[in-house]
Amino acid sequence: MAPPDFAPSEELPFNVRADSRAYTAFITTLRDTLAGTNPARVRDRPVLAEQTGETKQPPKWIHVVLNGDDGAAPKVAIRSDNAYIAGFANRPKGSTEDVWFQLSPRDCKQPLFKGAKMLGFDGHYSTLVGALGVEGLPNLELGMERTLEATNVLWNYKLGKLEYTAADALGDPQQNLKRKLALLAVTLCEAARLEPVGGVIDGG
Image (cartoon, rainbow, N blue to C red; front, top):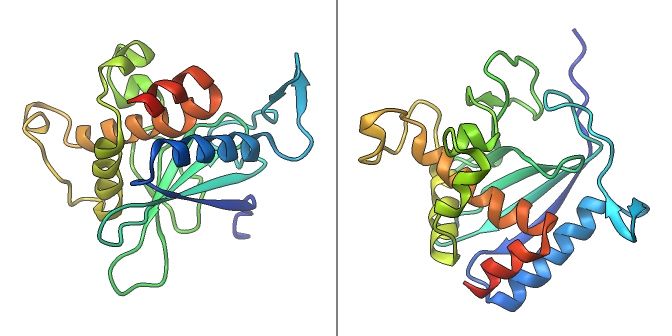
């Protein structure tokens, strides 16, 4: 069987401890990168590329490198066709290779990243924050400190060795990871999609 072809990627570094001005500048860069060099436009607004499907390669990956504390630097993979998070990568101590973890439907066997480990859940908000889905997002606590916590969780994540919280003991052992991914989806993806969201985070 031929190895899968992976879409090209572009890395965007972000210093999580940067001030609000730097965050605003980063979101502008992310928005421009998602749009590409010659996007279709509606009312002078750039439109994302045509979607290929969540189990297929997008036209391009945007790898946001979250530079946090103590050397933490996970990569968050955002699809260029819908601005959704599809996976993240960390790097075990002493290794030179990224380890990718993939968000996709439970029955998906197709890797979107080299050597991807399947997390067993997708990136839909109803999965990450519960049945309320998008309506549950206002309950997320946003801001620099929470983003730093999310950065640390992703950087230290190992499949099968979960960081449990009190809430996890009552149900889903991946709940902490899911909520951190939801937080990053709002902080990165929704802020790039919708200017008012970026303004709220910037002001908070």
